[in-house]
Length: 225
Ligand code: ADP
Ligand code: ADP
Image (tube, rainbow, N blue to C red; front, side, top):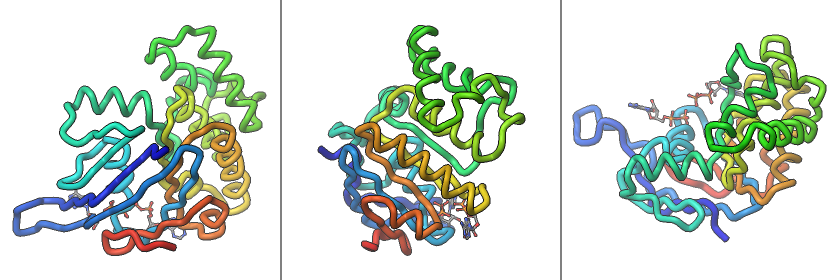
């Protein structure tokens, strides 16, 4: 079952203007449930643009974008926002946790926003924190945690509402190499325990090789790795 399907996706910035820049041209990429795919791209290749289109934060100029078999092209902003909230989890290079809230609260809040009861949300947060090995940090604020711990919390937050698609942009790119390996392993374990489809951008070829498949993005096109 294809969780994410991109076909013939094209994107240019400043379209129709003198400074038009073509970023993606004819992107074909399908990711199945339970599949972890590494996205390797030199800087400026269009990686962020691709992740934003896949996660419904940006629109393609042409092509097919399907999430969970649902065609998202031409849908209203409202519909796209609902699908994004329900189906897509994002992780970035920087954690973007709310500094005034504890690790647990950072994972509970998006669930409350989704109508989940506090009791259920807290149990889910505890379960996720335990899965990434930092149950003992539940009551800590981000600035009282290490970079690796902060990023683990960000993974838990991304999965709190049980999305079916995870999009990650250099999730361990801000960590030193040793920490990066450990934190990446925690992310892989978290994803493996679910049927999640995951597209994870990384510059680290060793980490990329641990995933099910590697796709390379070069000059706006997917080049099979
Ligand atoms: P962007 O946010 O524009 O996509 P990145 O955060 O991916 O850019 O990268 C910013 C810069 O740091 C780029 O020049 C990129 O090549 C470099 N960079 C990022 N992560 C790594 C890494 N792990 N190894 C080497 N270079 C990296
Ligand atoms: P990556 O994440 O691989 O570094 P991006 O998707 O961020 O690449 O950007 C791809 C190309 O598109 C780059 O040349 C970048 O300068 C350009 N670009 C990105 N966003 C915009 C924008 N809003 N307007 C114009 N050009 C942009």
